[in-house]
Structure formats: C-alpha cells, structure tokens
Length: 279
Ligand SMILES: NC(=O)c1ccc[n+]([C@@H]2O[C@H](COP(=O)([O-])OP(=O)(O)OC[C@H]3O[C@@H](n4cnc5c(N)ncnc54)[C@H](OP(=O)(O)O)[C@@H]3O)[C@@H](O)[C@H]2O)c1
Image (tube, protein in one colour):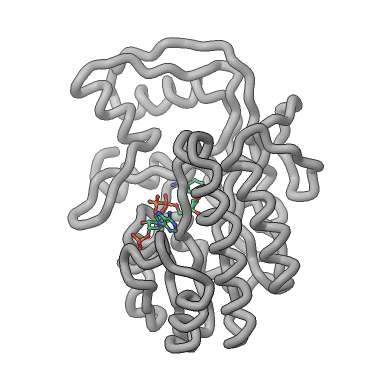
C-alpha cells in the first residue's frame, strides 16, 4: 500500500482526503497548525521522518481576499511552502501532487475554455502566487503534478470542516434570507469536492506538469445558480450582475492523461445532491 503524506489535512480538501482515501492508502499528515509557522528545515525533517511515496500538498492560504490584503503571508504560504515541500519530496523520491487554482486565469479577456499553455498574467495576488508556485515547484521537481482546481463545494458533513461555497451559499440564502449576486458574464466551473478527491488517485499517477482539474461548465454563473435552484426547488433572492470574468478551463489534458474526467458542473451538483439524499 502506498504511503501518502497530506499537508493541510485540517482544511476543506485535506480533511476529505483523510476521510475518503483511508483504507486505500497508508495516510499520514503534517500536524494541524504546523505549516502556518514551520520553516524549510521543519518541513524537510517531517518529510524525511515519514518517508512517503506521495505527498498531497493542499496547505495554503486559500482565501483570495486575505491574500490580496496580506501579500507577504500569501507569498510564504502559497509560493515558498510548496517549494519547500517540493525540495523535501526530492530528497525522499516522493511523487508530489500540489493544488493550484483556476485563479491563475484571472485577467484574461476571452471566454475560454482555457488550456494549460495559455499565456497568463493573473489579476490578483493569489493567482499570481499560485502561478509562480507552479513554475518553481516544476523547476525543483519536474515530475510534480500541479492541479488547477476550480471553486469546490460540499454540504455540511459530520465532523468535516466546511466553508462558504456555491451550493451552501444558495441553501443558506434560501433558508435565512439575504441576496446573492451572480454575473451573467462570469464563467467558471465549480466542482463537487468529493469528486476532486476521488480523482486524486489518478492524479498521483500522472506525468509531471500542470493540469486543469475540475468540472467544466456550459453557462454563466447567473444561469448556473438559477438552474441549481430549480433542481433544488429553492428560491433565494438572486441579483443579476454584469461584470465580466472567465476562469473556464479546458479539462481535456487531465481527461486524456488520466483516462477519466469530471462530470460537468450541473451533473456534479446532481451527484452531490444524490449522495446527500436530496435529489
Ligand atoms: N476550496 C476551494 O474551493 C479551492 C479552489 C481552488 C483551489 N483551492 C486550493 O486547494 C487547496 C486546498 O484548499 P482548501 O479549501 O482545503 O483550503 P483551506 O480549507 O483554507 O485549508 C488550508 C489548510 O492549509 C493550512 N494552512 C492554513 N494557513 C496556513 C498558512 N498560513 N501557511 C501554511 N498552511 C496554512 C491549514 O492546514 P492544517 O489545518 O492542517 O494546519 C489549513 O487547514 C489550496 O491550495 C487552495 O488554494 C481551493
């Protein structure tokens, strides 16, 4: 059984990795809270001690607004830390799978969907740091797999950390009131996090490189929200906006290399609702 070391195991994605992949891999994790303060030596020592076959690196400052306001903290967490993990992976010969983000596509004016080799100039700090991390990690560890993840969602599950996400925000607004705003010129895929975690088993086997990683979407976020509300039979107040953005990703590189792909955004939501007995 492969030994897999998980960073960010207390987070939204990491906690689900620990729950969902248990029994299929020998899982171990960086201690909770360690990576917010650790230096490169501490990272290297932990990796050396664990001698993993694979490292799944999810630890990050994942809040784009926080990164924008605290660029130095973001640089440490989102550029330096993955580089330290990559160098440590090199010393033990571990395969590294590292989360990047669709935010690297901010600032593009086309609608896409964008392939991994699209020239980029991200419009926010988080996107810039994720892009720099991809490049530096690949320089240090050319067989590393960098996953450009979309916005991910889940519903509250017993014992698992939850954060504001597309599906939960719709439910909360329907239950508690409040207006949600979505733009009819905003294009992006959103992904059921459990589907993303499942696909990590394939990601661990991929050749090194950058991969778009998540559900595709054939419509804008305003229409996506309306369709999901119709499926759920809920009626939150949704305000239509018109600001432009596209983070749409072409998933064919991952699909072709892994031999499996993601459900599209609408099918992913139905999958999630089915798993929670809500469809
Ligand atoms: N969630 C999304 O929708 C989404 C979308 C696109 C990309 N991503 C990327 O996917 C990965 C996982 O995201 P997530 O939603 O699971 O993030 P998260 O819930 O914010 O968890 C990140 C984890 O990183 C560790 N961490 C927190 N602050 C840190 C700091 N200052 N320095 C280093 N480590 C720190 C913590 O791990 P411990 O609790 O174990 O200490 C935390 O639980 C990240 O790389 C994120 O950028 C996420």
